[in-house]
Each structure stands twice: as structure tokens, then as C-alpha cells.
Image 1 (cartoon, rainbow, N blue to C red):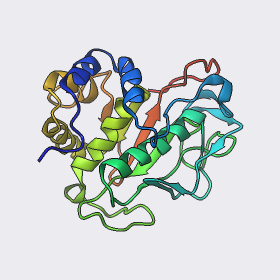
Image 2 (tube, one colour):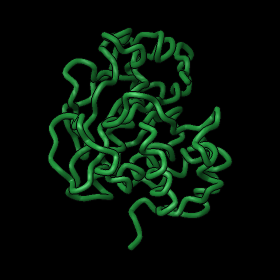
Image 3 (spheres, rainbow, N blue to C red):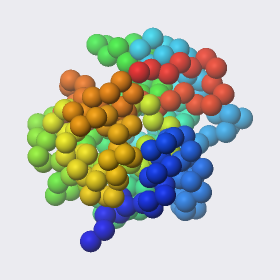
Image 4 (cartoon, rainbow, N blue to C red):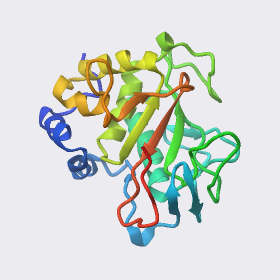
Length: 242
């Protein structure tokens, strides 16, 4: 049975050459019920300033407590740049559409209302970083992060689907996960029909190394992903992180 993750071969070839070319294709394929992941400059409220590790956020936009396919779980850091919030609403709606009955995406830290450093976190300062919980096998009900979840308990088909949808927007700079997930995620992508050529800019070489790879290991991400967006077009005060 084909996974809902499977997309056209031509789209994957385009992605392998340039992620940015997928924006129009992804937006055009979205149904009327799926919100856009893009926000025109004239309609933006927030302004990302500086970089994720040294920045601030002006007029931060709050992620709603919940919506189709997502639920907010952080008590304070739920503000982001407009296209960060738009992306989370988009991903939730896509998850809801592809996997009816799935537990929602649990969205953790984004930024404080005015950004800046929060506790021991160095990142999440300018509204373009966002954390979310991995989806688990068996679709268990969760209200918060499951910090004890093991790598072999994760639903890699669904987790890859969410990453894939995010990547195909062309808006993603980096995705930080635990090293134990790299192999299973790569295999899930191949099961979904992605070629090794198309996956190289995402995962790097066969050892998951490469300076420009998007998905990479970072300590402390065994139960949630840390996703970093690119600065929105036209945001001159924003600086992309690594």
C-alpha cells in the first residue's frame, strides 16, 4: 500500500536541484482547506530581528492553542514570525488530511513574545525556530512531550511525512534530530519513493555528513525536533542561522 508521503517523481527531481523551486508547486497543490505557509509582506505582523542565536522578535505572532492537526504545549514561548506560525498551521492541516484520526503535532518552544534569550536556550531568539514532538507508533494520546520515548517507538512514516511536507515548502534551513533517527528517517524517505540523489542535500553522504545537509544530529533531540526556518523574503532585519 502506498504511503500518503508519496509524491510525483518530477517534484523530487526538482527538489534535488533546488528546494526553492518547490514553493510554487506545493502552494498550488494545496486544497482550499489547507492554509498557506506563505504570508505576503503587506500582511505580516511580526518582524524577526537578528539571528536565531542572537536576535529578538518585534510584534510576535502567537500560535493558537490548537487547530486542525496541531496543539500548542509551551506555556510561554509560543510566539513567532508570521511564516513560522503559518507553517505550523499548514503542517497540522496536512497531517490531519493525510492521516485522519492521528494525534496532533505537539508544538513546543518557538520564541518569547519579544524574542531574545530564554533560560539556558541559546537559540529560539527571533521567531524562526520551532520545536515539535515526534509522532509515535500506535498513535498514543499525549498532552506533553514524552521525554522517555525510544527511537524504535517512533512512527517514521508519519515523522518523515511531516518533514517532507515542511521541506517541500522551500522554507526550511535546518532540522535537528537525534543521530539514532537518521537511518530510520532515511529509510522512510526511500520507502516513500525518494531517490538517493534527491536525499543527498537533505541527509548528506552515506554517513550522514556534509556541510550543507538539512537534517542532522544535534544532542538533546531524542523526543522532539528542532526546526529552523529561513528568513522570510523581504525581511531585511532577519539573519539566517546555521
